[in-house]
Amino acid sequence: FRSVSAELALYKFDENQALELLNPTHPDITQARSNTNIRIRVAQLRAQALQLLNDDFTAAKELINIAPLMTGTSALSNKEQIWRSLKRIPEADLTILASSNQNSNLLGWLSLVALSNSNQDDLDRQLQALSDWIQTWPNHYAARHLPDELALLSKMVTSRPEKVSLLLPLTGKNQIARKAILNGFMAAYYAAHQRGSYTPQIEVLDTGAGASAQALDRK
Image (cartoon, rainbow, N blue to C red; front, top):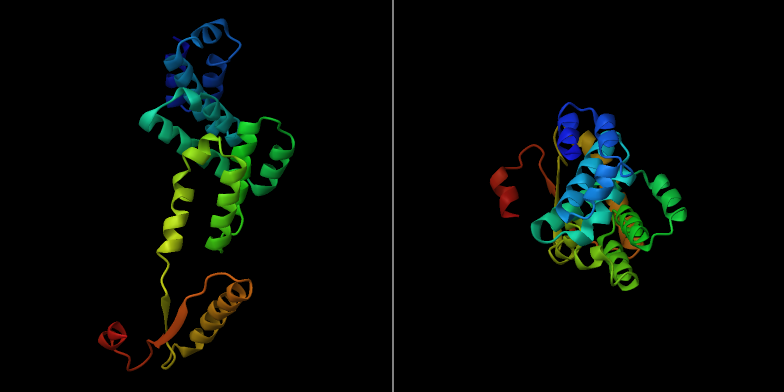
C-alpha cells in the first residue's frame, strides 16, 4: 500500500515523495478513507511530511481532522502533536490564518494558541483568559482535553510561593554585578504589582564575603 512506501520515503527524509504518494486525490488514498485506521495513518504520515517541510499549519489541520476518529492514549498524543505544531507558528502568522479561515474547530485551536502566547508573564491573566476561552468554546475538543501546557496553569497558580529569596552578593568583589540584577528584578516586580498581578514577598540575602551556606539555608 502507498502508506508503506510513504513511510520508507520519510525514513529517507524525502518528504515530497511521501506527500506525492499520499496525495488525497489518488484513487488508492480516496478508497482507503473508508478504513478508519488507514485514514488515521495516512493523515499522520502527511502531517509528519508537512512538518519536515515547516508547514506546521497544514500539518496541524491534518491531525485536527482525524481527532474525532481517535480514542485513548492515541487521541491524547494526537492532541499534543496538534498543539506543538500550532505553537511553532509565529504570532503574526496566527493572526493572518485566523482572519482567513472559517472553520470553527480550527479557529478554536488558533484562538487557544493566541491565548497561550499572550500574558506569558502573568499567570492570573492567562488563567482568566483560558477560563473565558472555555466558556466561548465549551464544545471544542480542546476544552474537554486541554493541552498539557495549559492544564498545568491552575496547578502553577495554586502552588506559587508566598515568599521568594533573592540571593545576591551585597558585599565582596562581586557586588558590582548585584546592582544590575537587583534593579532588573525589582523593576519587573513592581511592574507586575502595578498591573495587579500576583507578587510574593521578596527577601534579599547576601551571598558575598562572609556569608556562609549554613546561614543562608537557615534563612
